[in-house]
Image (cartoon, rainbow, N blue to C red):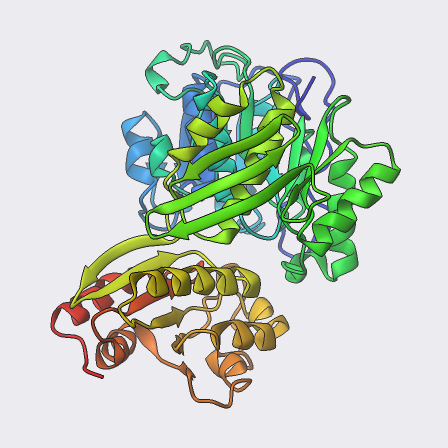
Length: 517
């Protein structure tokens, strides 16, 4: 058995949370196994992660309903596939036939649908527990880490497809190459029609998933291959301190199934140390990176706007291949995906895995070119941690230099979470100062209550050069970019909040004419 919950029999799933805070929903630790599941209700179904649960449930033949506070890109496709979705939170949205309610950490205990579920005795489970139940019986390739999860997971899916396999998957973002952010098969039309049980989801091939550490919920999984791309302090609003976060990763490595592998990026100190501790406990560990001691090593790389050419040393010999994405961080992501899939499916030809991976063009908002206006290229990216910000700026710098037009890298950054902004203000300032000019927007609160002590200046006050500046709102952002950008420049729109809604205004302003040097 290779996932942490099964459709029938006793549950082997671990509790998805390590901490319960005031206002958190009290959830059952596992997907229900004591009753048939025919109808699922997903609260906040419009989010990338929650919509993945809804999609898998639909493809498993279950009836799906859900709710959210507003419309979004994932809601229309779910409705077209048969989901009944209300754009409000109301106890009346919870139909009489609902067998289980799925929530995320963003759902609070006073949500009327949660209250109604508890009153009616309907099991309430966390998103990760639902994914574990829906993907029960499959060999899981799980990708964890502070950053790089979505891209690495998408790469793993494409590699498996290249080897002729048809894996299930669940990601926390849209990936154009996959067509949707979750599914049991590449073509949903061939998924077996369900009779109402989560087990009716086609053949039991492998599955590639993101394992989210932000709330400890990745402890719902028992993977065959676990990739840890990196391990740095983050999500301390939930975990409290770095020691607790690290302990959660250690626990996850202990849940790798017998015969499975932990795959760690040896270039990252946190991931490397995690691998060393796991090896001491007898876990099989595979390393990847640039160091000569790695099992999977980057020997040479050459990136451009069109992608990357690679030469790799692998346990199966030297491999030369190409990627359709640029940046050293994507080279490491690709190497981690190949190592994990190679360990999970050792019979697959390495050249076939690499061929599938080579056509991966990236996840939504992962160096996603939004458009060009006035000779200025605008790129959307999800980077919201200092190291992600630094990596994205470095990738942009490489592209601009390769073009040889003397262009600059300009950044608009929207901090995500007051706690993260407070904890990493100096690190954000250092990362952002690597751009030629940066504007920092107001903090996007997400799941947190506003903190009037924390704002853009919490970051900008750490930079004395004047190249990192606070800015208010979308209108001011668009005007600032238009006044500074000139043809040949590249503008990065960075953040995990709603900054993507500002990008059209920036492009429109640039279309009215960029500035002059």
